[in-house]
Length: 635
Image 1 (tube, rainbow, N blue to C red):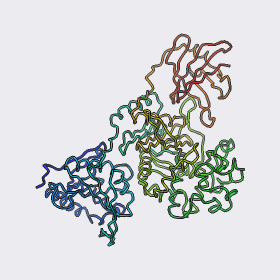
Image 2 (image 1 turned 60 degrees about the vertical axis):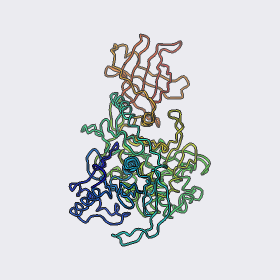
Image 3 (image 1 turned 45 degrees about the vertical axis):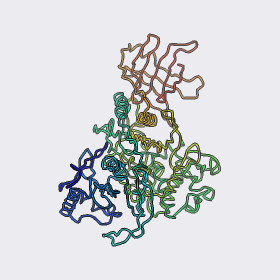
Image 4 (image 1 turned 120 degrees about the vertical axis):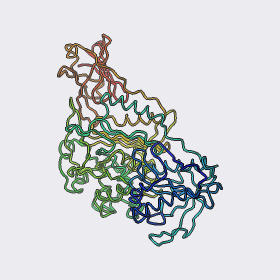
């Protein structure tokens, strides 16, 4: 009989590790049938559900005999076994307090979500604190870099290589393994995710949602634990379909990080190098001898940014491109803005050339490369390349605003490709974040190069790299904004804190950067003021009508603000990113007799109409989403 009174069930924020029964055999057999799961074990697993039942029975018998504990890993939400962790003493029973050997596996659909790290933390704490053992050993195939990185993140230290130590029964091959171990005296428990911040996160989000300022899906995760994963607003206003964490969104320029990742994979394979001139891969491209792949990755090539021109917005963006050569033709013969490497200017053109280089080096289309070499291997099964024609089930519709919700200008996605052409869910983007932590599918050298700061104005390869001060601490921040045709998205990663905040919106004016910054500060313990509830007040329609007009800055550095009176209410019209103008409603919420205060629809802005001052017949104080205030004078 086991020296333990009962099977030790362990719980974490997301997981329950429990004893298995024969009812779990189908789930166990299902994921063991995946050769990717058993590649680095020593066998292919049970050959049938009946064999899986016998295996579970033998594990439970081993527990009764005091020689092993094998937990089934389940999500609390569904209690389905998605993996296991086994521990057993190197010899003898548990009661002898001998060193413990640990092993584990996880269904592929749950990779790169921090699940195994979260489960192992619970088991390690149980071994040291519950069983009072002093040493945990692990053996990892040399080829299994992902598992090695997880163990080292948990504090395991490498102790050597054991040559031809394990025989894989399925492949009938001997394998060298790396020996790692963790001592109790060296173990520093990782602080748990700040669960006490979850209510504050939801308080902020719910306050924003009540004001109608959220339309999309949000995910916040800290140290492998998901704190928030929730959809807000509508994915399809025509059919009243709500957004969820599984809703697919176009992610715009977040795609650049994936393109850079593909380039580094190809460097790992020896098919290119970031110091290669573009001419090595695209021989006919002008200035290809002067521009390197590194220049393209860091926006230091000097290439003309075709997507920032009036011609593109008025005409080209609406036209189908039959090939990548059609897109390159939009900028190939334009003069360089500066000599390559001498300056930094954000340019989609560079990432279109990178797309062409990926296709040339790999022999695959960009969409096929992303699907087979990046997205599927990382378990990002709800992500892909959006060509604008294929129907993507579960994808949100993108929206803009002119008084009310409207469809945006049509943008043909055939031009987007590696510059801004991918779609994803927030859950898949979280898988992407975890893969970047663990270095999945890429060498550590290439991962380091991706996140090295090159030009200060941009940063790494496909990512902005900056510092953010939160709670008085300067923290490294890796982020990117994406926006395209009614969608906007932002991902902010704080690698030293292992915090990631993701917001994908299908409302183009949603200030995703400000909201992800607020959520990060809340998750890291800072108090952030959410928009308060401000009930509307009654104002005479004649008074509202008198406020209509054109308001301008005295120095004219920003275009005019137009206040119009329509449908018995006021609307504000103004230019935002890229100079695009939007028009949305204003609701009066305060009056002092000499001034009126309004909140705006769709976005957290404040407008105060002030009394005339000197030569000004009226004044408007406008506070934008960042808190910046500007005083406009009525013409």
